[in-house]
View 1 (cartoon, rainbow, N blue to C red):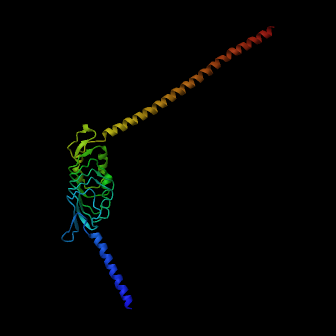
View 2: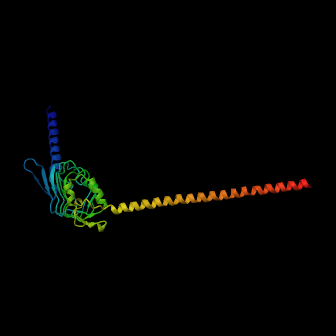
View 3: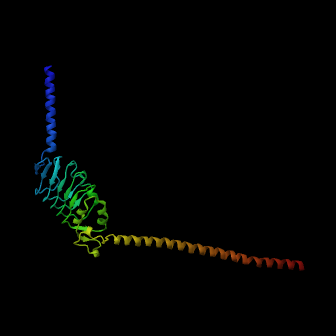
Length: 258
């Protein structure tokens, strides 16, 4: 009886230790970061600002509500970089060297994230797949955005708050003659950066149609000429028939006289 009691106590003690360990792993602070609990149960804040980080920390606690990774050396945000942070409401990635957001970079944050700061980075190309499902308000200012047809086609595909897209100010453009440098592209509804592509497509269609038209005309000319040749031969043959018949009648007359 005493032995059974000892075994039960040991099992209970092990279970408590395991629970504590798992809880500690899920809620402990990330290395090189400072963590704090918000008053009123607002969730954990993880500050990793100005730590010269080149990669996203992989040990951010799962119950984190706010993450500050500003003023670091990040150059790219890989896919699923914040997977598991289902409670994250605010993410600050400003003042880095980020030039690439891979597709699915913020996957898993669509239902929780409310504010995303990507200002003061080196983002040039806008990829809708990078913001997969996000409905947050984003700060996209102070990036060297390149405005072209791809950007124009990508913007309607994102679910970010519309005011977020006003932060896309064109530093370069294609075609250059559209003169959108220094302008917020969303606020220039009359600018069509796909006009060159549309013209190219129209020219290609005209070339294809002209090619088919040329082939049809060539076939018709060949068909008419071939039929004309056959008709000429047939006519010559028909013209030759009376002469042969006349010669036959002449031969019959000579035979009769003889």
